[in-house]
Image 1 (cartoon, one colour):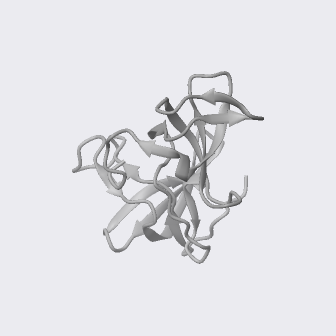
Image 2 (cartoon, helix red, strand yellow):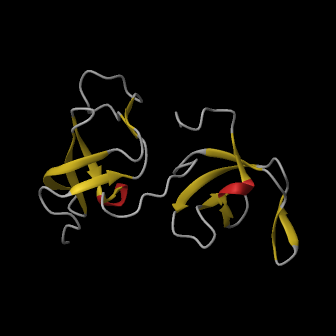
Amino acid sequence: MLPAFEYGAQVRVLRNVRNDGTFPGYATGALLLRRGSVGFVRDLGTFLQDQIIYSVHFLEQDRVVGCREEELQLASDPWIPSRFEFRDRVRARIPLGIQGRVVVERGTEGEVLKVVRDAPGGVAYQVWFNGPNALQVPESALDGQGMDDDES
């Protein structure tokens, strides 16, 4: 298991980071960092011997937060913002189909399983809609669940 980021690397967090109860002085669930925030790798360690955890100092917020590798990218890499992130609840804005057959009706609720920032045509999401499979859906085909997208 080799780290993707070196000490001192400037990185960007890919999703909102909320307090999981381990960050003192903030309520569990409180927003600590907005997706897109930039910081510097201070240290790294492992969790359960199979995940690298990076201690990242976010200077603008003056917070040191533990982040998993999949939550980070190099700050020098292009930043592609997204409306939704992992676990967000969404609704289909239009009927969704596979090979001309509608499999998800307009208005059906689902949950984002993965953000695909490098999809052809822009950001897309793998969304589970209570069916047997997840669908990859373009951002334009989804609405939020009545929440402020910036706070999700």
